[in-house]
Structures are given as structure tokens and as C-alpha cells.
Image (cartoon, rainbow, N blue to C red):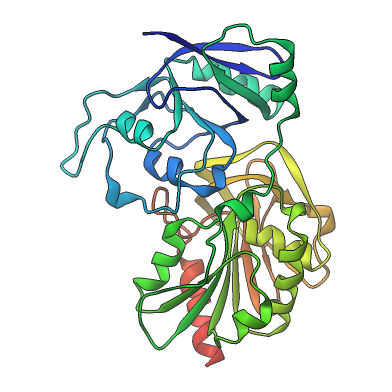
Length: 354
């Protein structure tokens, strides 16, 4: 097999071989600690513009199961793993994971020392990198690597028009910042109608559908770029309708109320992130995928801290008069289900509103 390389902006080089689509790609290199759910990882729009490193050494052992992911498009820049299973075994398997990556144009590097790579990112912080067949890129190429920035990720991954899913006498409005398909599915399977709006939808258009509840979805990129989205989120909060904000939605809602966000050294990505009650003792294992967080020292005055990350103490949840926002994913089907009660509590609030 031909050699392929991941070269970080600091010059560190990691050798492997290609198993997905071929080509050269630049992206922000991040790692996820999930032991399973690789299909959901690849399909997650939140990874837009990023080269994703799997810390778990064996990937693809249950193959490709199309029923487990439903996406608008696959937007991650590239994919890196230690070993790719070539003989998957699962009664639902429809093919090899490597073939799925190739079909969807995902440039993939296998055979990498992902332990050393992950330690490098943990020690130095998230860096840009390039997957290439050239072991010695020229100065102009490395300049492009260093200058790379993820831009307009929300606009790229959001739906482009208003969409309706499911049937029922209760209507949930979802503002889509690049949401994972399972967020909508959680409400549809509970017998609700879901109206999904693009990221740039005006608050008055959302409210015109007379929603029983409003959800601000997860998404990709820097929340500080989402000034227009934050302005509309403020209007939605002022409506008094019960709201649930998830991940990027949580950050945008905080910004809309005067809070601040900042970039983490290497983020929280994986299905084993511990979250603790801020005013209690319970700890939940959660699925997360984010590189930014709400600043604990600049929480909005009208918000109360609900949850913190048990590892580093960062903000994991806030409560407002008519809203709850969480940094983790209570709807995640590729990870733990410890916090699905948050969805149930939100639905209960919509009942009270009626």
C-alpha cells in the first residue's frame, strides 16, 4: 500500500496508508474517545472542517449500517484510525465501513499511531493538519495549513428550507444549526410534529407556527460567529415558550443573554464524558462533541448553572426562566442514554404551557 501522511502544523508527522477516498485535505485535527458509534461520528455535521482521530484502536468491526445514520451530507474533512476492520461481523451489516468512507469522499488515513497522535493533541492543544501522500510539503502548503480556519460551518451544515417531520397535535420547532438527525427523531418517535427551520430563520417566522416548544440544535464552528443567530435566539427566549438548547444551541443562547464563550484546549469529544450536577452529587455519562464552552466566569445574570464537567469543571448546563440548555447530547443514539430525562422534562414543560 502507498504511504499516506498526516502532518500537523507544528511539523509532527504520522505515517499510515489510505483506505477511504484518495486525495489531499487540510483540516482541524481533533480526537474522539468513543469506543463505538463510528458511523454516527462520521455522519455528525458538528465535525465539519475537521480531521477526526479515533482513539479506539479497532474501527469498522460491525461494518456499514445505513439505518444507523441519516444525514444531509458528510462534512468532516478527513478521518484517521489505527486499524480498519476488513471483515465486519454484524447481522445488520450492509458492507464495509471503508467502502462507505470511499463512497462519500472521506479521505481516510489508517495504520497511524493514534496513541501518540492523541497525546500530542492533548499536550499541545488542537492543531491544523494535512493528510497527503507528500512526506515533505513545501513552505506554501504548510502556510496554508497553519492559516486554515473553519468558517461558515453553521450555514454550510444547516438545512436550507423549512421542513416538517412526523404527525401529532403537538408542534416542536427546531432551529437547525447543523443538527444530528436523531434530535428530530427523538420527538417524532414520541408522536410529535417537528418543524425544522434553517439557522437564519427569523424568530417571528418560528413563532408564527405556534410551537409548543422550541429547540436550538447542536452544530459546528465558533459560537462567537453566530451573532445573527444569537439575536433571534433572544427573541425566542422572550416569547416565554419552553425551550431546550443543545451543544452549539446552548452556547448561542448564553451569548444571546450576555454570556461569553471560549475555545477549549482540545475539546470534549466522545461517548464517555462525565457530567456532574452543580448543586448535587449525581454524575451522568454523556456524549459530547464540541471545542468551545460557555465561560463559567461570564454566565448570564438570568441563568443558573445546572451541570459542570466532572473532569475540568467547565459549564455543561444552564437553566433560564423558560429554558434549559445543555452542552452534551441527551438525544445521542451512538452513546449513553443517561440524560434522556432532559428531553422528557422539556416535553413535560410543553404540556404545562398548553
